[in-house]
Length: 252
Image 1 (tube, helix red, strand yellow):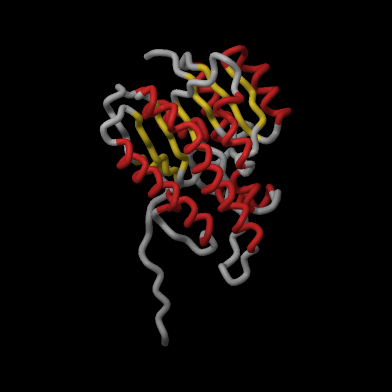
Image 2: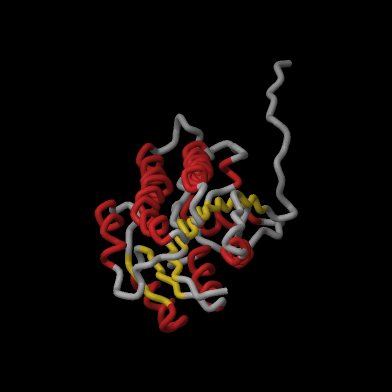
């Protein structure tokens, strides 16, 4: 497989860090973006010259638009975009949920992802090669109490991925939606619960959930397939998780 230049958002922790490590181990070059510059610097020191640390906030629209021209010479032709930056906030029912948290999820999970895709996609089409990998969620397909806007943003990500692929038929640019279920060992639940690490642990208690490395393996497989093979969607769950029956409240 040829060396590719891969841009990963949200690379300072969790999935993003696992993706960066895996892609560098596979011989690729990685542009690692995130808000936390100090973590990116540590990742750069760990992984060496095949990783370019690039501080970036995906809610900063002008910075996303300027990104392709801002990258150093030799790094501007991005072969693979991994839209990983995203978050879940809160688990309250809709009538008690924070509107500010809803808006932050929409700004990050939807607007950031679409703006960066729009910034990099023209170059991929012009070169007639590339791959957009969007990190969605099993919550895109399976609602749960308190998931409200988070699940809706991930439904957008999955549907946006499929519609991108429809637009790109006839080109060699690929699009994949990755839809994980329960994944422990990341900051996901800690962020959701406002930094309450003990509450976050209860989400995974008694389970053998997926790890960030499992998702990195999945993404690396999809990216590493022959260029004529497009994986539209991958839903991946641990064996301890699966969809359940509809909830029914019966009057007695």
